[in-house]
Image (cartoon, rainbow, N blue to C red; front, side, top):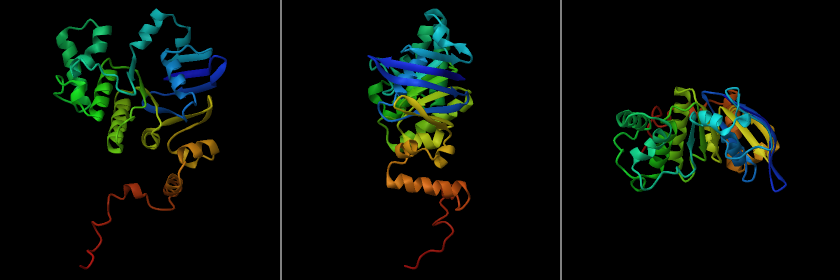
Length: 277
């Protein structure tokens, strides 16, 4: 679990995070959303220690990260995996060497043990036998999966994902979301996702924190967001007429007023009689 309390952060006298508090639990995908300039990226950087908050506390499983010295923080950082927005793979390194990088930094394992672990995580992200490939030989979705493999190679308790679907097509984005969700549940990780992708919000948002002008404007689940009456949140999530209509349809599904169309299993065309030619 990650908890932050009354976090404030300013730059050059301008407040970017204003008294934000939240609790993010293990085994679920915790999403931070908001428009550009809302403070969500700064908040994530405060959580991992790239920025120091001006005020407040950040706790990892009850341990006060903000009060720790660098040596104490290193222990926590070994338990953190990070998936960067652009995957941040080393172009000159093979897939295997990219994934092995954290193992070389933080363990004294034998080469065989490290290789075995690389193979385990590659198989987990459905990239078996890609060890010798280089980033230039991979598609965008494959690069993201290599990034995920590297992020989980040390069996982290905490996983941070910065815009994991950036630059991906909708189908690949859904596959990445599904993989992040599966890994989160399977390993009981506290996963924090910074995203603009509304598909991610609706599909994997167990907990959603909506930031607006540096403040926590709303929090809840992907189920609760459908029924939210928060004007700012609704204008951000359901900005277009199409999405507003989709929200109304989902509300009707959730209340049982119409059948759940998403679970219809493509019945149309399977059981209906053929049209005359």
